[in-house]
Image 1 (cartoon, helix red, strand yellow):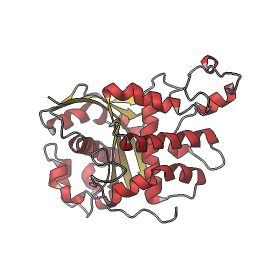
Image 2 (cartoon, rainbow, N blue to C red):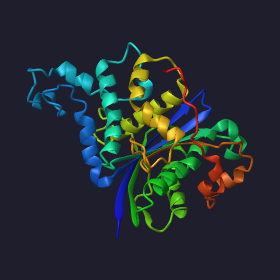
Image 3 (spheres, rainbow, N blue to C red):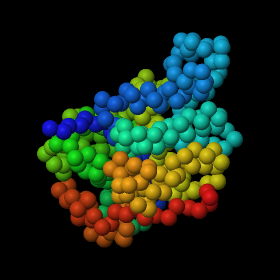
Image 4 (cartoon, rainbow, N blue to C red):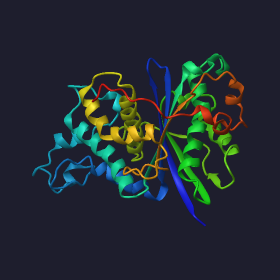
Length: 319
């Protein structure tokens, strides 16, 4: 029997004057998590002679011989795409972010199957917002479609497996950590909508700060990773500001994102993204029958399958 165990790391984003709610889910094989984290952390070391990250700079064999405390602190910066400011962000962050995105390209081309991500853009202008309550509308929308994003990723990436175990779901600590239903009930409702071969071990969503300095948990690196992926792809699609630093970082993943948008099911692409990465927008047309969307038992992926689309034109301002 073909089995796989997964951990999912998630973050959200609000775009275009909050017209779009973005849900990003990074799927990591549980037995590969440490390897992925080690890769991310090692990319923080920018010393060519070493390239092995040491949390304590004094344990680095090149300390005071090419490695300095100040450089180590810069390389240990938090990687949050929204906080990258032209002229204010140190070059170490830009270099590390680019290496992190290159890791996705390498993962695909070398058939490592370590990194899967699903990104869903929700267009609030095409949703009947009044159907999502009178308070915390954005939170209610996110709560409902989070299950859709998770299920879409599970269904598309791992349909060849006989048994799929979700070991844990981790989310960046933000507004959703205080949502009435999201932390404890979301995954229970998701389970009711999944096939029997998908097992969720822990129904409580765990929140992480996404700050490995504030919280001593290396999984915060993965929260930063999905934040970087969402931010870079959104920048490529919408080009909200002319930020040289962000543009330099996002360019690394531009060709992959372009193919995911234009030909998402191409099995023969040299980028080998088929059944590994996915970008979707919803809905294609204004959805009037919102009760179906809110229904616990209604399978949104089937009821409105024709409303998910990816053929979005990328902005031409980046060249």
